Image (cartoon, rainbow over all chains, first blue to last red; front, top):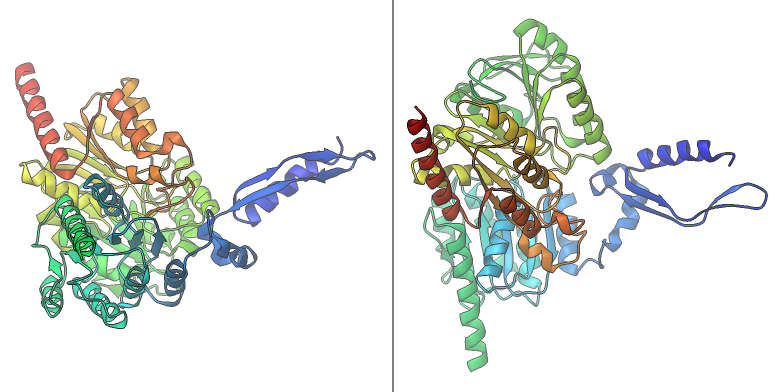
Length: 238
Length: 307
């Protein structure tokens, strides 16, 4: 078939220039006059390269599996607008809001919540940020998610984020969304720089559970699962 | 000597004049890492924490004899920075940038591998051989406290889990030979099985702990190496992320690389493969510490019986 060689070269060029992870031509047809015709094409574009692929970035809004929720859209916007490392947030079907970091510790805690009989309302991941804006966006998303009935803040031990900055973001968002931790349980496992200041800030809101320094991941997960269960049972009784 | 880095490693920092570069450089110097040069184009002649800054890696290597480089160059420019380090003859590269476009990562990784450079990352917070050297942020200003010297090798796909694992091991009296946060991006310079092969040859390591996640073939390759008898030292594995199996594939949680694309990528499948190949698979840090402690005692008994 003539032109197949040059088509292959051009496809590879498109694959590279478009930052594709996958480029599929199926089927490829040869017409009666021996021309090549791409009947079906499918491509997967690298999320991490969308910054330099404005045309694909505009299409990316539809999400991979389903449309983004209001909360997910809010966090994505905050991620682009405010300084600091990447923040990710995806909503799920359960009722426990998760503000967990880093990537691996977040996966482990999510597993442990499921093992303790709980169901997370979202998954999240956040790196250290210089301002409270990004973490506050995740808190806003969790507090405005109608499915969420409690919040676990579970950062890995000796992470580099300032604890007081995370709690400042929490209080900002609690005020904006009128959250009462006596009705919406909040459990915090957050140790590291400026922990003392963070504990003093958290103590200004009655009902927040700030776990003692050194508490394990499993204990933090059990605590939030039990607290959300208790509230749910109270609701049923009333 | 420990794997990859030791007390004689001479380190340069690419992007030393940025906020993260300055911050980590100070902690690394305090720890005792020999940071001999910094590189920031256009800032040659400056100094950061007493470390001279050069315009190019080639010049810095020529003047200071640096043989390892830590890169605080952001994702958009990191590929070129890796190529510059490889071309200058650097032997060990630590690439901290996260969410690096895959095509850039592929170019950088293939250049490093072709030159037989040991490249850690992308998206790593560092590696440490306690008492000898640390590269990157790992342990922050508490590295000496968290990472006690000992005979356990650790390789983790999560930077945040490295100190957690080390603390858990400390609680049962075990220390670290080398701990590597191998990087959370899908493409990394070195793969998990390669670190295990280095630990296998390392006289200062008795057993290896690994932390895995869904996505990538890293854990499967370790299982293959175990099954083939290439790795004979005991391996303890903690694999997080089984909850993902309840959701559609193609969704990434946390690390970009932690995405299931097929059944073999799941945490459960990896656990099963590793267990079948002879690793001790655990479900929490407490279990991890207990398993490592039991295996370390057995190694000790074995070596004294042999001796």
